[in-house]
Amino acid sequence: MTRIALVLGAGGVIGQAYHAGVLSALAEHAGFDARDADAIVGTSAGSITGTVLRLGVSPRDLAAWAVRAPLSESEAPPRRDLALVPRMQPLRPAQMLRPPSAPSLAMVRRAVVRPWQFRPLAAGLALLAPGHNDIVGQLSALMELDDVPWPERPLWITAVRRKDGRRVVFGRAGSPPAPLHLAVGASCAIPGFFRPVLIGDHTYVDGGAHSPTNAALVRPLHPDLVVVVSPMSGPPGRPGIYAASRRHSARKLRREITALEKAGSRTVVFAPDAEEQRAMGDNLMSGRRVRAVVEVARERTAAKLAAGLGAAFTSGS
Image (cartoon, rainbow, N blue to C red; front, side, top):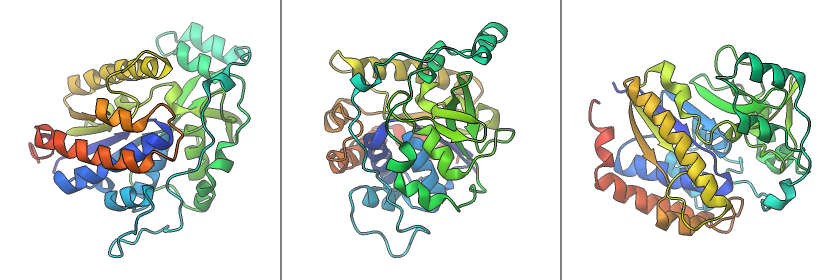
């Protein structure tokens, strides 16, 4: 049997809608049920999608839930009351332009002692002044998970520790223990916009500060196939902050894909093309575009599978 790892990248509410459209199309047209992935890595929005998949929500219901359509009766998910698509305040980059915190001694030490592991961008984002918005409060559905144990099948949720800018992978052996709902909240805590999330003795921010996908995390698992859904990649489009963000995401993802393929894993990447990006718009927290994004992502993914990407799910199985 082909061992498949699923990587779900960052992208806000719109990113979740993109996940839903892509994964529902993969289930329908390629026979890949994302719930069956041998490992799931979730970053920011991807941590929410990955968690509900591990709770048993089918790809079909993932898309139906996103657009508030009826759910399937034959595959009733264990938490039908869980609000899959959160209602977020709009993300305004200007709100994040406040004086940052000074680097801690631990961050300086890490930069000096382990410069090859130090990520200046991740450290800089971790140092942004804490935002005024409470991610755990806005993701009210997370509180539905406060008594849900960590899934038995691998679910790795990424976050960045503010103390030293280090990536932490909750759910992976050797990582700090964390309640599932707080791990998801930490992974979604956009630096400078949301308040960091306290877990144990440390506070954490969005795992996308380290990488919008963190795809290379699955390399030690040696999966046969890595499926990456990356809402923040794709062609950059017209100049601006979102174009710069897409260029950064695409560059990071190319490096991660190269590392995976050198290790012997096949990869298939789904990133929004120009048509999908037009549906997504520039406000990744907008709930008004969710339905359009789900529908166009489902249509474009089906077209990409028909054009050749579908072969990745049949070869070697």
